[in-house]
Length: 119
Length: 110
Image (tube, rainbow over all chains, first blue to last red; front, side, top):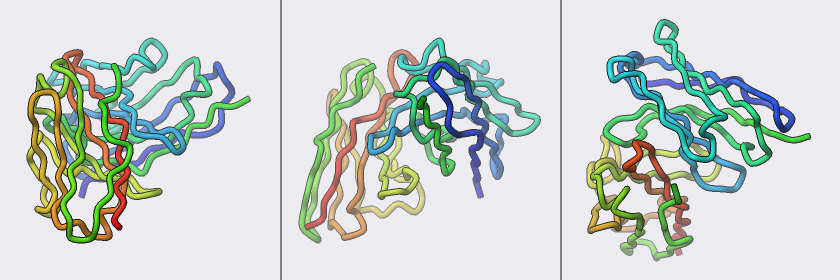
C-alpha cells in the first residue's frame, strides 16, 4: 500500500523559511516523480511543483507563484522529498500535500501538513 | 499559468446525469491528453477519479467518465448518488512542463 506522510508544517512569520518533508513507502520511490500541491483554507487546489526521478534527470518545475522562493529536492536513500520555502507570504498559508505522479495525474496523496504564515 | 475554468456549482437529482466542464487553452487541455479529475469531500484528501482524459483507476465506479473536445474536457457522473456530493477539480499538463488545476466545481445532489 502506498503511503505518503508529510511533516514540518507550522506557524511562521512573513519572510521566514520553512522546510516540509514527505516520506514515501509502498512503491518504488526512486523511480517516482513527486509533486507538491497546496490548498488555502476554503479554496481550491493549487499545483506547487514537481521533481522528476533521477533517471528522468531529476528536473524540477514550479508554479509561477512560488518560482524563485520554493525549492523541491529529494533523497532517494531515505525515500523523502522536501519542499524548502523561503520568503514566505501570508498567501502561502495552506495545507501542503505531497503526491506521486503517473501519466500526468496524481494518484496518491498524503494527509497534508498545514503551513500558516502570520505575524 | 491561469487556473482552468470550471462552473462554480452543478446540481442534479438522485439518479440523474450531470456534466462538469473544464476549459483551458491549446497550451494545456487542448494540447495534451494529460487531463485528470479529482473528487474531494469536505475535510478529506483529494481522490483521483480520471487520468489521461478517460482512464478510470481501479476502484472508481464506472458512473464516472471523462472526455475531451478541443480545449474543453468534461467529467460526466451518471446515476448521481448521494455520496457524489463533493468538490471536483480538473487538472492538465501544460506546455511549460507544469500542471494547472481548475477552480473547482461544487456538486450538490438534490
